[in-house]
Image (cartoon, rainbow, N blue to C red; front, side):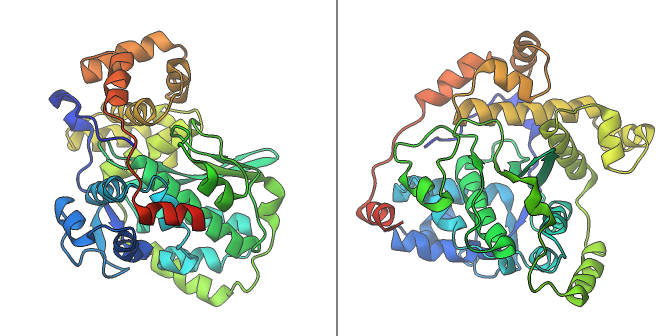
Length: 364
């Protein structure tokens, strides 16, 4: 487990403090925390959330505060696989409008495209993505906020939830060919193997389920075209994220596909590059500043959570070699990526499992 690492004050301009998350099935987490032997009210208060913040699925909470809650819950309960326990409780219906769109799409491919297109209705601090490469498909999740304190817990949560979603769409026996997690291998991998039915590839560059592309053509049993039409109308009238959130998400999505040019991002947002530059200038920033911010956020995650080499981190961020990445990181953080990682590792600790936590491991 990791504690958040403080970064120099000059880097704070990368953070997105206004991002929010629809509560959904996080309503079940306080009861789970209590079952694991901790006081959820105390953890909510420490995370800056109201006592009733997770009482209603349709409420929205601060994405950053939710991360603080998950980090403290995992650390205090000593349950290293808390995210898996949270995610395995999710169903498509817990996604509200987005779940309605996904469940009533005609095919699995259409369902996953709806999930990624309208994910902002559930969270504007994160990104659901779909990458189709020939015979294989990756569907996954990416954090879009610097200083989010529990990316490892959230990634476990969202992949566990994604397994449930795909089994609703494809049948209860559906299993991915690979599970990719961008954090270090945990001490006990049994809960991961039991849930996913395959041993995940830890220390991956992305968080995703990988599976054969033929599943995309599978019909979704019980899909209702009329319910889909109504949901689509509602989704089209939903309030879009603010411009900077849209650009951050677009840049993150482009990096996942090994693109990072301003023209690529402008096309993704359906605007001309000059329009994008003008609107960013009106917000007091530039495209390069946003790109640097997203790269710094991803670099901090990979350096602190995983054992991925600096060369692979640089490649993930779109650098042709490690040297320009190291120079850029030193400019952003005031230290080298190696030194930053060593600080992160020094603050890493292995939690003591509570009796309830061990009971969950054994019963998983």
